Amino acid sequence: MKMKALVGFLTLVHVSQQSPTVSVYEGVKSVQLPCQSSRLPEDTTVVWHRYGSNPSIVHQHRHVFQTPFENQHYSGRTSMSDDALETRDLSLTLEEPHLSDSGVYLCKRIRKGVELFPRYEVKLQVIVLQHNSTIGVYEGEESVRLPCQSSWFLSKGTTVVWSRIGFNPSTVHQHLDEKEPRFQNQHYSGRTSTPSYALITGDFSLTLKEPHLSDSGVYTCHVHHKEKELLRLIVRLQVTERPIFPPELCLMLAVCLALAVAALGWHTTITVAQEVVEVGDWAKWVTLPFKTRARLPADATVKWKCFKLFNSWTVHVHQNGQDTFKEQDDSYRDRTKMRENPLQAGDLSLTLINPSHGDSGAYTCTVERDGDVIWKRSVRLKIKARLWVLAN
Image 1 (cartoon, helix red, strand yellow):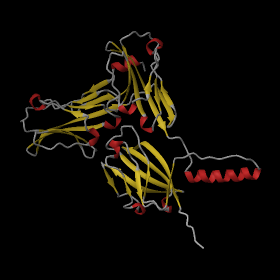
Image 2 (image 1 turned 90 degrees about the vertical axis):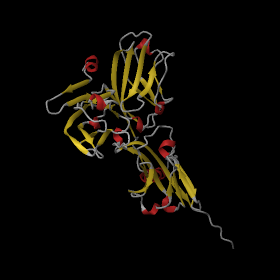
Image 3 (image 1 turned 45 degrees about the horizontal axis):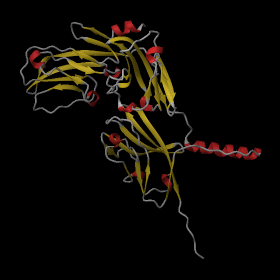
């Protein structure tokens, strides 16, 4: 598919007599779900719902004294015209539509607790763009390169912007005149660059340093000249965790290898690299560190787990802005804590109170959102026994 043709058909709208269907490509700035009504009193409440969503409310255009309520998935992404009741245009604007936004939406009008009929339904279909390329990289690599090249000669005044679909703010990197203001999502601060002579060579490829799991997503390379779009390329980046053996299995393999080496008479040193925290069994507490400068979503879930042999235990869970103990294993009850607002502070470290030999093992902290792991860190805890000296 040619990119010029693709850009010209970013939004497609089909309207039937019964209920309209709005089709839009994922990655556009916004989409509007139409809803027109007859004259409405000023104390009417307009509520947009989505079938199958829990809670179902997507947006409310309400009387000033009513309390707002909506599904957090749509928080900050929906709006209606301020004078919607006067103009009778109750259309809903949804910013940055994702594939997960596809579904049937319902526009309801309520006055004094009574719903006014008829209802208005709109079907939204979000279509995923075909990516020009997919780049895979392991977490922990020094850098990764997202390709974007043009055969055209570009003069001054050309702006190159790399953005990430679904991010707010969406700008990842800008290559433009020094006089123009630069904007960048702080998650990518100090980690991105493009070639110095990009306008001459036509190579606008983005280099991203220290890729994390949370960097996985769809990136777009926009090339503009005097507000005219010259090029748009879409690249999917998939950052995966480097495959490793469980710590216990690594230790077993190391022992077996050491025995084999000894039997053959070789001399070598075997080292298994891993972040380790050691503390004595007399300690009152121990902290498993996890700090990051990345901007983590406030609605994410933080889970600490402990792995021993082939079993795992839930150590601590932080969800919806507070600690929850429903999933916590009884052996860790009343013995764990995290700082207040850990996601906002970027400090997900876990404090374990009164550690004992049974607490030794591999601990993993995951940051999850909508069922996806966007960040992960592992620490191995070793509890050292105290030495007793017996007097004669």
